[in-house]
Length: 302
View 1 (cartoon, rainbow, N blue to C red):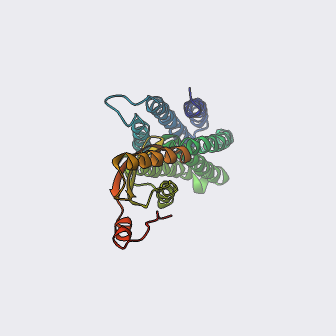
View 2: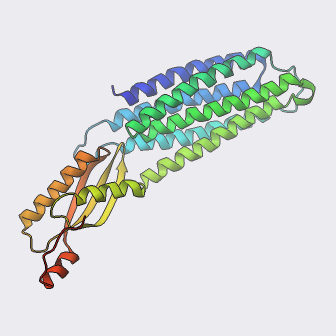
């Protein structure tokens, strides 16, 4: 089992404990905000579970029907996490406002303790998932890290709401309900953000220009390369697949140009660990053609 799967399992276990703690304590203490935050933590179990499944399936090697591997499953799990969080958030908002006009006793003081525990635990989990998610380039694990980060904000929102209610129940009794509603809104917008990022990857959105420049510069370090005419990349899970149009001398033999293309492919995969594979298309360099016509000695661009 790789590190990403282990982190996802740890997240599931911690979220399960926090969900049980907040729902039980929140119900006993009479706090809508704490119960809402507990429901949100229960949603985290669902999220981490999908991340774990996605990471397991994404680790499967390429086969005849999936020559690019199964990495998109990991991205798809991130999309499911985002959509699931939006549904959970809407449910929290609805239930938090159902009894907002009712008169009842303010929540007990001990309602704040599970929120404080949650803030500490989620701070550690968020750091852990961001660290390993970026290290292995896992969209789902990073999405889960953002989910934990938002959990901290939702717990702080609930803590503020409970604190206001306890400070002056006669004036701020409804603050506890509004706190639950605020937690729900936070969850909805988090789901939207995660879904958007996953959808962009599934739509083959190009990586940032800094990464594309790394590919071009690495290709141009190979002797015999005059330039890179076109360069595309798409993400398939943890890594990128690159399509490269390479410019070489038109006077080269097919074998010589093929050798250069192979060198470029191997160097990019060696130097850029985030690249899974490179498909190289060889083209005659306009610069070399012009130089040959002028009787000069063509030199590769650097």
